[in-house]
Structures are given as C-alpha cells and as structure tokens.
Length: 168
Image 1 (tube, rainbow, N blue to C red):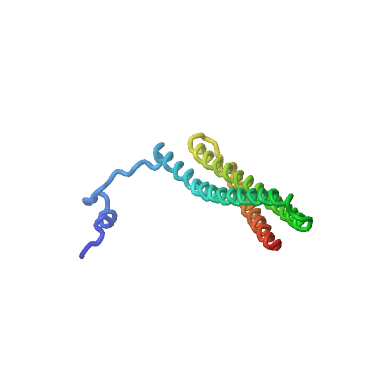
Image 2: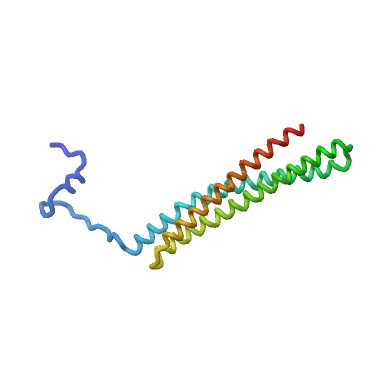
C-alpha cells in the first residue's frame, strides 16, 4: 500500500507502536492568549481603514461645496436681480449640502472612534479578568449605526448635489 500522506499515517498509529509523538504547545499559554487577543483586535482595524476612506470622500466633497459657495458669493454682487436670485437659491442649496456633509463627517468620525474603542477593549479584555463582551458588543453596534447614518447622509448630500443641475 502506498501512503500519500505519511504524517496522517503517523497520526493514525497507536501510541507506543512506533508512532512519532511531537510535543503539543500549551493551549492556554500567556503568549498564545496575547496572540489571540492581537488577532481579535486587529480584525476591526480593517474597518478603520474603510472608515478613513469614507472620511476622505466626505471631506473632499465638503471642500468642493466650500469652493462653490465662495464662487457664488464672489459672483452674486455683480449680477442682475434675476441672476442674483438664482445664485441665492444655489447658495441655500449649497448650505444644505454643507450641513449634510458636516453631519456625515461627524457620524463617520464617531464610528471611527467607537471602532477604535472596540479594538482597545478587545485587547484589554484579555489582560484584565473582566467580561467586556457586553461593552464591546454595544460599542460595535453603535459604531455600525453611526456608519450607516454617515452613509445615509452622504446619499442625501449626493441627491442634493444633483439638484444643482436644475439651475443650469
């Protein structure tokens, strides 16, 4: 009989019948516990990267809105009454967009801070003899609610941005 996986054959051999016995690492060593804590704590860090990307998009959109407001304010005094009225309406729309963007940035930042707190709590939970599961779960749910709010506000701001086309 040809054995394709000799290690499996050794594992299947009864102890004492010439089987190779390797020492197994302790299942609950402090280093292993710390390694597991780092694994758990690092996983949400990828979420922090995604939220950072969202914050980049939001701040970029906010900068464009601010540029447009500055341009409208520069143009308005030199226009005739009808054109000035149209520019004033655009300015009000840009202010609403700015409010939506500002709130979205606030919620995304809150989500980032909550996820960062989850990372810290996951790590601390392995070092202190206290069950932080309810705290971590609550923080994570709050982070997700804040993130959903930020994305919803981004969607509303984009919809408002499309209304700018009505002026042209």
